[in-house]
Figure 1 (spheres, rainbow, N blue to C red):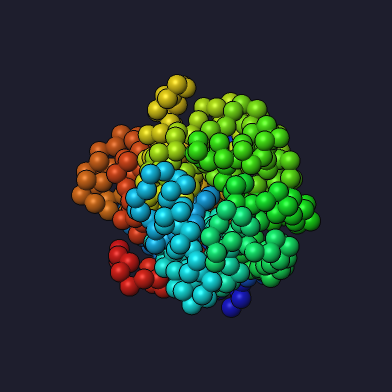
Figure 2: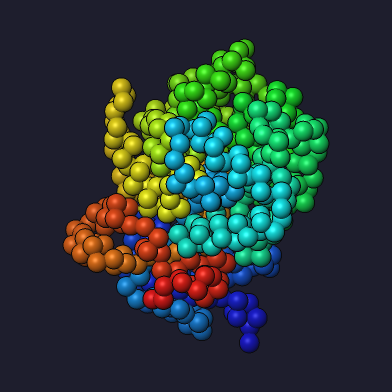
Length: 449
């Protein structure tokens, strides 16, 4: 028997993907067949897709899993999430800075304990997979143990996951603050060497945000970013007006919050800045020029009263952006909840132009568009041949209301929009990672089809 043939698998269902990624329009095929194959490097990728009867003729000896009345779609990508804030989700506070002081900072101190960090990492990754998120750019904490815990658990699951040690050497409590700036940078370099490009893992240089890093630490981050051009950079920018005033006091020579990062060499491709709610046209143009991206976090911005992201302004500047849950400031792990919030936020005027986002736009921002922000287009976020085999199985009849609305949809756009507005984790029937069905290996309460 052909050994390569044994490594191939077929998945039969309706298919939803970006056939032409440049157009950002989803394609839908009833009764399709997806073929996956394991390569010589051990990575499972999509080899073919198309109408079942046509593809089956070529792959007649491949075992096929059939999910009737379900839809296979690309796994979702979360561009900004804090795994260490899983247990502070839904904590009330009067804005960003009080929320950090009252809940986040005290809780993150616990991640110096590897056993505790590992237990949270397991739950966090369970929750991502339960919600159909197959790739994420994550914040850990300032503790090396927090990075090791998440990386070890993600590696065991064969996930494509990116994270980094948080750098914060001032204005942070004991037990969280980097007491030795040089050591914090050395730890970051050691973690890059240990984890970056290990299996499907990636490393992100992670200054928390400009106020909690000294200029020396930020410049050190910039030097590491230059030394390791294929690692990611992640931080926060221009989320909250009080925060922006603070940055202006700390960095009076900088033109803007974004300029603080630019001056130290942290604006480049594979740099992802969360929020960017309060930036101007010059900032957007600069982000676009260098190829940096924005992680838009609408549920977090609404929950903490930070403001509304300017989708129209970002589009005009040509800056790349994608969607993010920002748990625990964000209020849900579900990409459907995040997409719904983004749609609502884009319609708000707030002294600017409102902007109506189509279902295709929203889905793009959480899949193929987010992959583009990460520099992983053609690798994750789509079902095209060559993409890694991480996908979800959607049940459009997951609830009675969803079933009632989706069965009456008269177009693909209506069908997608109904799921965005009415959907949550119950829409996800299966999450498949590298050919492994999470319904079989994940949490016991995962619903059976």
